[in-house]
Length: 207
Image (cartoon, rainbow, N blue to C red; front, top):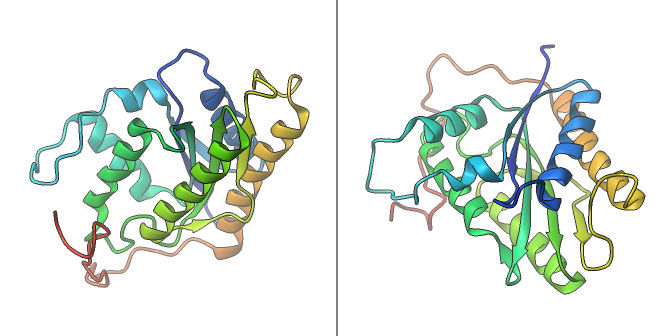
């Protein structure tokens, strides 16, 4: 069995944000569990142009992101909660996974997806985690049993020493993603890539 690839997507534009640190900790745990990791942090996501389904030409960073997810065995998503929902930069990055709709593994099909949310309050943390899981389901991914929600209003997340409980949750998310990859194995790409239904995740059709 080859080494699984886990791609981390998320963060915010603020340098050394709680969300970026949380994502990094989960990816470190995944790497320690035996995975290769690749990260698209908040700064990288902020450089993505707005997703436009009618435009076929993609800039290099978009191609890199989509290619990484195409090769990934697992994904970890981390978002700050903005007004009770997923941040615009993270949602925009996920919208680009529409480019995988015709793949033999469309969207996030067959991949474990770890969910991380940072929020200034438990209500926003809960609603955003639920929303993020709904997006993953729409993209045919498998959310891990544990999703990490950090209330930064109570304890600003500056690392494991500042919030040991939160750090433990983040590490478990990373380990669960790798465990799913190892249990499921790695399915080879079929010789003929016609197994996809071709149904779009954007409301069962192109928009």
